[in-house]
Image (tube, rainbow, N blue to C red):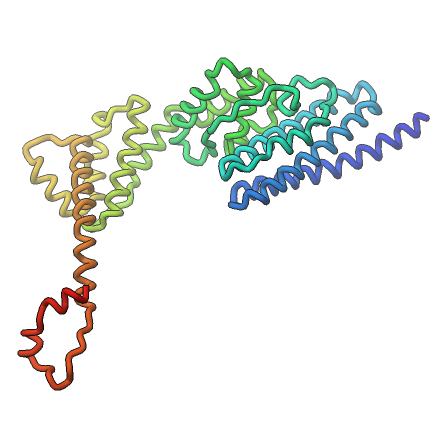
Length: 354
């Protein structure tokens, strides 16, 4: 009888191994479609397939639970939790994606399929069970870690909506956090299961890696020191981009209580070199008797950009009318093609052609 149970255990484990492999491939496909596809139908289909595969895993886990010895139980639970966490994360991300693309109703059908899913071993993580209250739907921006300068604004929004939300427990907060981290940030906290203790660990990991003030200061200063030069003052788009880059990074430093006056002597000559020469000359004329600061230069650049944008908006209609006028072709009879006739040709005829 024991040999039969052992054979059944090995066969069930082999089946589960294959199912886990398929489940992982499904999550990879789902991630690719969410990142690259605009077809919500494909994402929805992969989402439902993922639910089906997770149901199979839960059934196989329950069968194995009754066959393994007590010494193997701990490892079994830990491995099972990893797949459960992965399912919760991609379930949440798929629902958020589909809801953001359209109002397609997926929750009823999804919950119908999940009603018969019973998580074994009475796990403390209850986010998947439909008998538990559903987490409130929150619109949260994701953070990849590629743009470290955006971490303070990301964390401020997440802190306000989730971290300091007294109606959520730490497991719910961790579920939200895992649903909005991608790329480097997701890798940083990968492997932490959904428990209250691990939520605190995950927050500390993210703050230590992406929220260190000296790293964010270096990020903004490096951006300011490597601005793309603009050589022509009539290139309004490039000027606007230059001004926006200046403002974004200066505001980022100000949010860290770094005043522009503290680095003005370093940055001022650099900015003067990246703006068009005629603008630099005009600025020096206006401020020759005054010790300039970064704020003076950014205000001057802002006014110049706005003036050029207004002028461009006014000139464009005039240019289109002039182009239309010059493109008019007037059929003059061959016998009357002389300078006097063309000079005296009624202007009203031209106007009527416009």
